[in-house]
Image 1 (cartoon, rainbow, N blue to C red):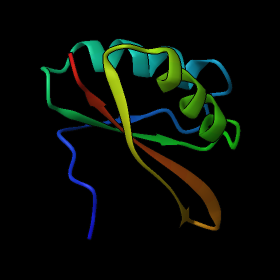
Image 2: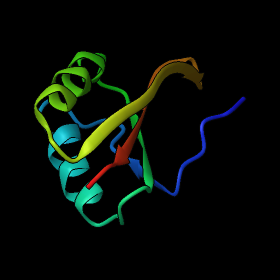
Image 3: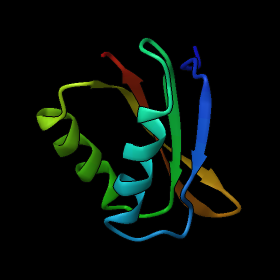
Length: 83
């Protein structure tokens, strides 16, 4: 079953810390309960997002997955705004 989301943020090609910086801004634009899907090509974003949600008080990491897009790994993160 696919993870449901309300908005997508495409940060493909962006290197650390830009996927987090842009995600932080985008998650603040959502209403409580909405989910942001982040598309990243930076392998380090997997650990970065896991670390971020441990300290952030208003988000939950719902899921992470790696998919192939044109022969390239695409790291997909689902972040839910909780407050």
